[in-house]
Image (cartoon, rainbow, N blue to C red; front, side):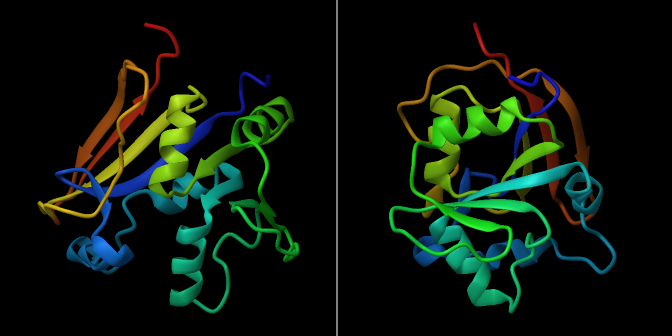
Amino acid sequence: MNADRKLIIYISCSLDGYIAKPQDDLSFLSLVEKDGEDYGYSDFIQTVDTVIMGRRTYDWVMNQVSEFPHADKDAYIITRTENPVKGKTKFYNGSLKALVQQLKSQPGKSIFCDGGGQIVNELLKDKLVDELIISIIPILLGNGIPLFQNGRPEQLLPIASCGNYDSGLVKVHYRLVKEI
């Protein structure tokens, strides 16, 4: 594998660990929206040339915008159904582990996992994640789609950086240790 090519999960969640409210409702993210503040996302996305996301996340995004925001990158939408390629966006229904191992073996920039919860947990379970960047939104949702599910192995998370913002958002950047 290419030691320089990392798989990074960059995601937001509530303080109690939900990436969405029931019915895939992401309205709570607007609590921290501020003009001119992207919490480092534009700098991060410049380090990425490949995106992996689940089909439900893709469908939600496409219901919000007219053009896929990662159309300029190699994108793999993880799905159970066959779909035609759309530009650089491929609908992938094979082994997620095999895909990531293949991508990591190729030269390139970082690989960005943009959700959803099932994809994140499968990647964590297979210990394929190198870094985890979580933006914590200052709200307790009490219910929804959890960022972390049971059944993952224990993993150490040395902190790379942490920052807080006037909006109440806290961004934590971890590097994962593969073996404990």
